[in-house]
Amino acid sequence: MAAASTEGAPTAAAMETEGRLPPRPQFEALKAHEMTDGKPQFRKVVVPAHRFSPLKKNWMEIYTPVYEHMKIDIRMNLKARKVELKTQKDTPDVSNLQKCADFVHAFMLGFDVADAVALLRLDDLYVDSFEIKDVKTLRGEHLSRAIGRLSGKGGKTKFAIENSTRTRIVIADSKIHILGSFLNIKVARDSLCSLILGSPAGKVYSKLRAVSARLAEKY
Image 1 (cartoon, helix red, strand yellow):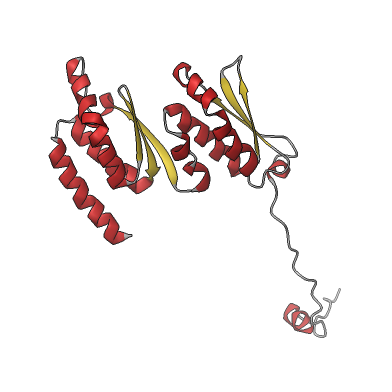
Image 2 (cartoon, rainbow, N blue to C red; image 1 turned 60 degrees about the horizontal axis):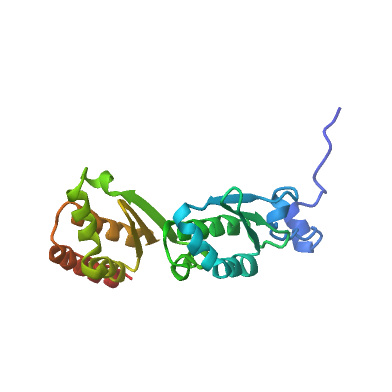
């Protein structure tokens, strides 16, 4: 059987130049509920006992950006002592759910609402946590003195590190939480580790000034 001749058939390029090809389809971005076949997605954030009263006091400040701006349903489950988050039909982006969960979790760690809300607005912010014992094993008075060195008199050392690295730091007993961009968290963590290991505050300040100057030149 002879092969079909293709000599007279127009090529795809020829059809395109003639305008005979159908237009390329334009697909709109899927909404959050369409990605999961209409099923809502959930996140739950545990509320520690010592953060229950602050949560009650600041509830409207947490509720407003989550529900009105990010279009995520939020409620407090009093029985389970958890904040529950759920996507809505008009949630514009599926990543909003995780952003809201990170925002609520940051508040539970001890950050102010005004600082934690930056997690909703900016994409390159993270929360890094570590313990003093991860850096050096300290007990009793040695541990107390290390915590004192981190804070400084009236919180002076902590504020100095926060301002020069553009981060926010929470010192909760022997746990330390840092909120900021990846590079700034690294600089703040290095300064805090130096203080834990016994470096005097003056030496840490001078090193911070040098690093901050380098970062300012870079950006």
